[in-house]
Amino acid sequence: MRDRAEHDRRRRSSWDKAFTTKSLRAYDSRVVKYADLLIEQLRKRQGQTVNVTDWFLWYGFDVMGK
Image (cartoon, rainbow, N blue to C red; front, side, top):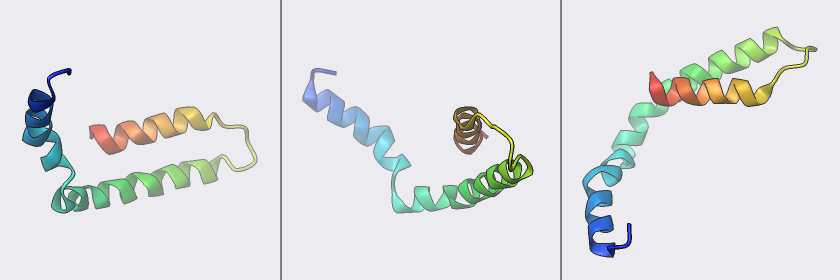
């Protein structure tokens, strides 16, 4: 967005709320839950070739989308 004032207004109205300390703490348990699941699944495949790009894509989707 080229209009700096409008850009700042939009950012403050939504994004700033998403990145407060309180909001980020709310994601803590979700991040840990899916990180543990990711590690568990990768351990099951130890010694095998895995596409880590796919696994991290799915991890990110789970953390942000569920």
